[in-house]
Amino acid sequence: MPQINVTIDGKNYRMACAEGEEPHLTALATELDGRITGLRASFGEIGDMRLHVMAALLQADELDETRRRLAALEAETTGLRAQVETSDATRAAEETRIAAGLGRCAERIEHLAKTLSAG
Image 1 (cartoon, one colour):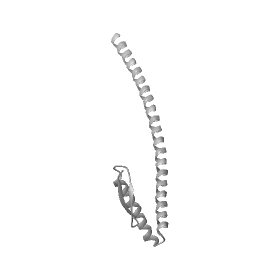
Image 2 (cartoon, helix red, strand yellow):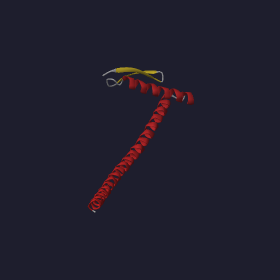
Image 3 (tube, rainbow, N blue to C red):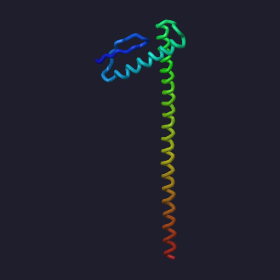
Image 4 (cartoon, helix red, strand yellow):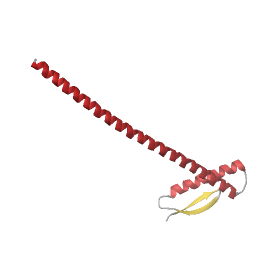
């Protein structure tokens, strides 16, 4: 299992991860470090633990919002798929009705043509 070193809030951490996940883990650590740095700039020295908790809560809030948005989009997608299915069924029924009407028209035209040619 690969291990990498990441720096968060000026502290180095050795982390294990799955093969190929090294860049992803490094990016996550960099994002967290940036968030903590931003909080420190906004609030000053309020304690490392408090900054880390605030950063974690901000990320948890973003994750929660993303999950809610995803659920809403999934529900919207389900609704749109149902509309498409209904529209497809309606279109198929209309095509059947039109085809039947064209068939009746063709029969009438043939009947008229026979009548005219016989007379």
